[in-house]
Image 1: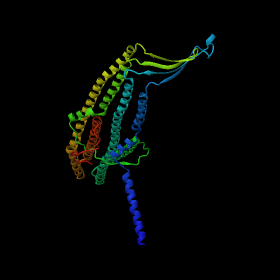
Image 2 (image 1 turned 90 degrees about the vertical axis):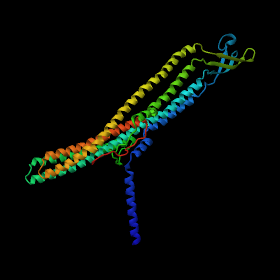
Image 3 (image 1 turned 135 degrees about the vertical axis):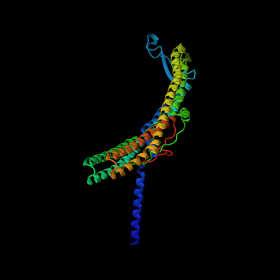
Image 4 (image 1 turned 30 degrees about the vertical axis):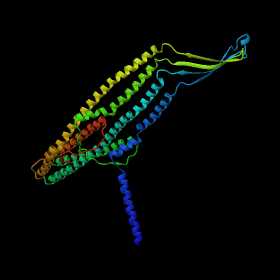
Length: 426
């Protein structure tokens, strides 16, 4: 009997541990989402295939001109002694092209530079994807936070309904007040239902990044009001030089320099050579034959391609300057948005929301005592809820600006940092 109870207890403990582990497995952190996208997203896997293609092109660029084996027959199918194959002179030859001007090295340098720039392009795309993951994860958190605010609104609207019914039973207020309070409660419940549906849709949108069709996870809750401290604008601007969007220009410069060098090698003519053995049918003798030829006018024909490559290389500096100015402008705008939203979150949390909370509580007491109207109490409830939503939207705006700053500077993505003063939050 004791052993059976022990076995049953062990089974219950094992079942509880399994349920806890399963529940933990369904909790998705932002880092988990990052890892899933990095491991499974097809756009990142695509770079592996592109590298294989470019590696094959590098192997092809390393080939030298092929050797050509030929056979030549002279004095064949003519008249008299040349009327058949008996009087033909047969020549066996071996020919090729002697490349000059460093064409082989230039081809290999161009192919290798394309491979080198691929890593920078992948890193830039990886940062874009991580930013998109963070935005979608934040959308889930925002929807759940809106549902939390709606639940707070529902709780205070239920108190208003109860207070209005109590006043109605006492004959101190008309039925219209109860109906207005119930309508406000229904609106709050609608806001909650909308937020729950938005959270469900946001989870689905997030899961599509790693190909999950029926997501069953819940995101680990984070406090969107906890905004991290960021570096000064000058320090952030100094990090722009290391961003993959500008690092790409260094790789592109190597590509265009290799193209220019390859174009310049075309100005040096190649040598076509041929050696062979000829059998003279008339004397039954053998002799060596050879030839060397070189095309004329290669320098003139190569000049348009050289000038085009030089123009593309010179244009790259201007393109980098334009991109750098655009990134600097975007960083300045994002930095300003973050500081503005951060200030709004802080002031709402420390100055506005606490006062509205105390005012709403005082209005409730005054209404129940008959010293205030329902409209005064309902207006303060609405203002407090609107302030909470405004604080949340400001925090989301700050996080959006923070994600843009992190993407521009190539810094690690974070979900939250040291908490700022938040005051009375739901």
